Image: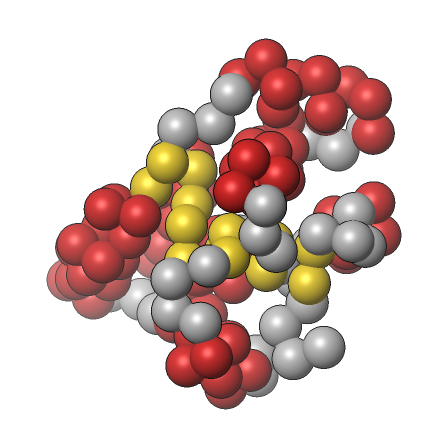
Length: 130
């Protein structure tokens, strides 16, 4: 089991040079957990791709439907107080803190490309392919 940051999850749908590394991670452990925030972040990324013409609406809606079907059952509640405390203590965003707190709650790694999280939480955060 691991917690997947939205920046990792999106690689399954909007391939980039990192797609193969993320697919290899998924093949190794496909029990990914996410805080509910992932849905809003995922929609936001799709919208950005729509606005610059890298996706059409039909494809974006399909990606959203597939992601929600697969990952909503793996979505978990996060202690908001713990997330706010952590964000304040270490200087990360409250959004990022949700992923960290969930990984701490589940005592599992956090898979992320976020440089700040990798730096702040080296014992918890893992970069795909590392």
